[in-house]
Image 1: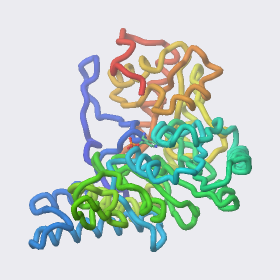
Image 2: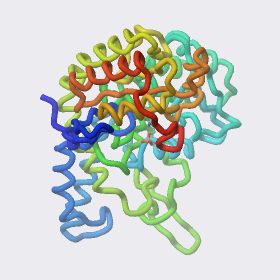
Image 3: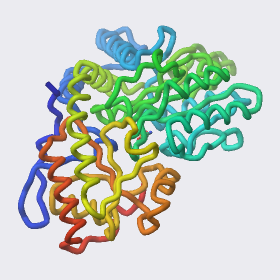
Length: 416
Ligand code: PMP
């Protein structure tokens, strides 16, 4: 059975004074902490100490926890023996770290449909941006064409495992095979894929994987970059300081090799422990997680698609393989107001906006110019069938009757 999540029993007040349990459809942004993650953190909290720095008992134990956490994350993504796991703050941090390590003469190829975290860190003058793909085959062909016309030198293809806007899964192994044929490296942004599907570096034959703890049912502040060492060992340390250094003599500094090179400063041990506990729980319950989503996602997608006035959006088409995320708009009601009404009247939490993927949302909504933004509903472990039915019925009521109250056009002040 699926492990319970902290917060799944949250009660929320509605605009009419009733109280209901919270239907969280924002797992794509962050997923609430698992009980087993909370237990792992609680166990470590009373006795943690600095890692790799002290010979005291607590330091040695904490160092063991930290390195065990590294091994767990390594196994979670099926990394090769000589791949390294560098703990980072989140996916954004992991991708920025890799961007600093890309050789100076490298060409980077990236789809415009990426999340900004995967779209923006690369040096602009050496980055080829491909238009959002129209089919999985076309995505593979576009990468092949770009690689054929790329200048000599190292190349890096950056792809998202699953779109944070539509949940659709990119043809990762196929793109990686094309990259290999052209001697290119591949970085997989697994922020959205890893919580839902197995990510196996070796099987996919990618070079790096980036992920975030807070999307994997661990708290904020920890993520990882996992993969090949060569570019990273040749790069300047990400943060200059203690831990990154092997020795400092006068003006001469020798930097560490391996993960320590890029983990300057006292590391987030508790975060690493939390991330590892989440990876362990997800691995253990992988089948149940996929089964849960397999039951709920078609119910949500079909339910929403059948509501007159609702449009759902897709990159690759209705048949694409996807994780539990649906992107939609409601005719005549702005997405901010849809999400405000869902929260206030039904206790439903969705995300609205452009989801830090402005080019992709612009592309998907090009034919519905009245909608600059969309609503995103993303499933997680705490989602129930009742939540799905509540969301579909609420959207139907909104689409049929319009808004029953006045809401501020923007309740959260930005369009991330
Ligand atoms: N890539 C994708 C596909 C994402 O969905 C996100 C988070 N929305 C990120 C990268 C960035 O993750 P974080 O904010 O944890 O750095």
